[in-house]
Length: 101
Image (cartoon, rainbow, N blue to C red; front, side):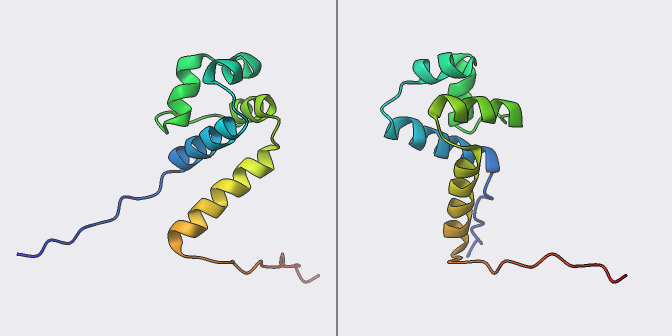
């Protein structure tokens, strides 16, 4: 009997956490250092990095500030991970539609 194996869906919180951890470790910063700078509890930051908790936009801004990384760079990194998972090399950008007057 052949069972279909379904791929687990991508979760944004996991990709964000993974990316935050990569950025933190690339700067040789500890969770304690980043949590102090961002004014977020060590345990909560750890849960965010492990993809167990959703971070609000305010919290993401604070963490990015603590890492000295623009939020846009973090989101770009997450977007690249999504594209890599989907096998996308480059998505075409659409021009905004202009309403006819």
